[in-house]
Image (cartoon, rainbow, N blue to C red; front, side, top):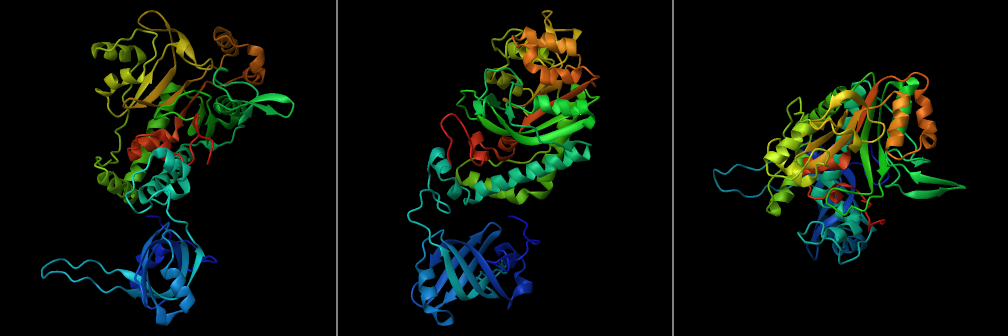
Length: 469
């Protein structure tokens, strides 16, 4: 699963299990020290078969009482499953299984003939979560025992895939000239209004956890960095309890000078296209592990279909008409909710942008052009969403760079410009037109893996009821 060919030896092992099992033909007769979890322990008396697993693969260790210290042999033979064990021995080719005449001979497999071994840590029994057994437990139990849940092959594969998605996304943004920044997560004022903030005491000052890096990435652009991105956390004190909302999440955020909403939509669709292409080319082994589990649960396999460019653009006014034509109840100026998105997704099932939302529905920093009006004469913004099917993935748009309009937008939304002076002052000395977006990492992983709940693809999720582990 995990490429470990370049991993260096450590104090506990000369090789990973993947290095031994993957290079067995050239390693036969070599002495190795490996370490891993005891997946199964079979045999009694003078011999023992130990199946060891680490993050790179599985291998059988063969223990013979006559070939090693008796105490070590007996302790390993009686070890509980998932105990961590270190063994030293020589690599050997396993005896090939008998096959019927005319049947294909399976590729050779390798094992380690053990000369010494040590239990590093004994696992308690019974396990609260099945690791190799198909034991059905609820998501809450799994999350309470995430350290064990991660040992399950398909869960481990999901988080290896998450790491790849972060890598591929970062690589693509750097290739397009974006520089990585880090914005503060302790802030004095809201980026998108004050209703969904987590308050905190910062010494003698009232402060909040950041909803978004929005204002700071804009200030970086105003400072001349021009193209910036961040992969980091944001916090929303929203009382949602749904399959796709969390109160702490990680997102890709970008901001680019001399760019409008259409320009940054292009950046986003190219980044997603790149991620899907790389996963399709490089990570089918991880997808295979995920699909093997899905098949065991009677679920359809997920396939990595690289989306075509460009993604469809469905302006807000057109989206309203699609919903109405599909029998949905909606009027211009209403939010497009999930049940409305189902009607749009019937026509556009994959990734699609929803641009040109009413200005009244977008944050104060979104740009608008006075001449751009909706079907009822309402002011249109240069803001957009990205959806995959029914689910929103992104919010973004062109930003307001005219300080007088920016301050009026704040007033229109019931906010005091004086409270945002640290932000608006940056626009008084020449501000380039700019645009950007934020894209939830977990939402991308839900699409890639077919996960039905965002908590599946977040290592230690935070929602209304969970602050541990």
